[in-house]
Image (tube, rainbow, N blue to C red; front, side, top):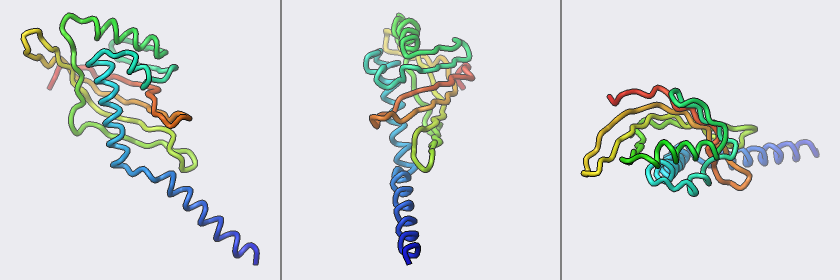
Length: 166
């Protein structure tokens, strides 16, 4: 009798737990990661607010760039952004190519712990006279991990296939 009562209750509890882990739908995750992408690049790349960018990037960030090599820490990454992006005479803007972002949730035991974000972005030089020059584009794959505090941090980056704009 005990097994006939406990087993269904246990199954119900496990199903409820799995449902909670799945509570974020794909569209909700896509919206969240589109916002994180915007935050990261608006603050780090477009606005050069490196302190705000630091909050979005893991301390042990690994960044692999097909033309610039590898970077193995938040400090080194932010230093590269400061030298190569923020110190330019004419600012450079990064834009996510509309419709290019795709995410793949990562789960362990049903619990969401990470997301791989894929996409393409363009780079535009902003001239002093107000004109703009689309200068390049590239593909990327980002690994975002959910921290113990519930915040997402960018942990690994592959930035590749840099090319002239289409």
